[in-house]
Length: 445
Image (cartoon, rainbow, N blue to C red; front, side):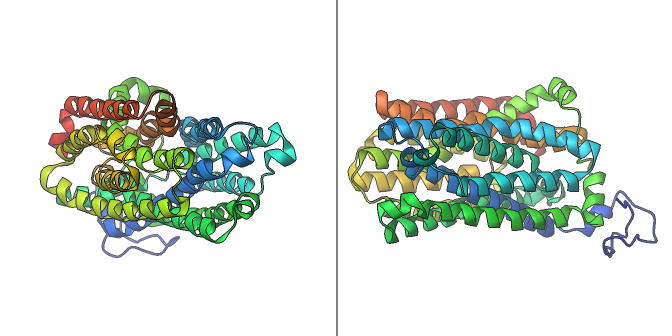
């Protein structure tokens, strides 16, 4: 990889610049907006795939893979498999970091693309329990693990590069751009499932209709990952990543020296990650089991909520740049704690209450989640930032969201919705505790 160029006029890939490298100014040759394009493409494709699987875990998998169980138990089993990707993701990150150190970033992303494509397409073609028996459940589990490993391996360092190159007074704005992938992904996935539910019979949907979103997810992920691969493999981006020291480091060494930052990073945004699944996946499962409401109609309400979330994500960038990300996250964690008290009243309040829960919850989620990613990665020294940012994200998803649908549905079914309130409240408390320890963020914001 070439490390020379002119910072005033970037040369095409493969053509070295005549001037020596000037490390103090080379990184200005690529604007933050250009980096943001790669971040948005990558995150939107990942979230679409994420929500396709999440919605299928509620609407499809209990019937086609666990027909021998009641709806509640079948959904809980589906949520267990849902969590496998979050368990596998940090393992994938570590394994693919080793591949990158041994070969290069392009090889790592290519292998991740291959595994992600096989896993997603494999689910689309997977025989159901009625055709393959228990083997279908085992295969679904392996494919879900494959998705998690691949997502860990797809880390390209662009979010960290964006954070480092964003203007100091616009860091909150640029930080929220990648987070827009979440509402966009939900809007696309929810709309696709709502359309299928409203146009197909139940038999048609469970027989073959549910497979189409996975075909679409496969296609989108392939295109998006190739786009990111082409982006990071250019000489200009490779040079910029190298200058910023965004390269893998020894995980054992990093854990030993940066364990505090990893822990704080995983907990700082816990309120956002817990709320994430409590307004997307959990309500859909609760409505499916306990309410006579139209599922396609409820998805439409959630899509409306995702639109509000997108607006909240954008607003979060403005607020964070004015008041600081640490203060923004802390304030939103307190609001989420207050919102947690409303869970039983709203979810048990009929359609009006449920709609209010979704719309208010998505709005809060947008404001908080907009600044959740990389909230404390500024604490990592340059040497550890590439690996630290990836593992912090993995651990935050695992601790905050990986088991949230399973825990929330299990608690509400066996003990009542008030325990879902306590679960969400615990996430908010953990966020506030972690942010109070992370005084350095306020200084570096």
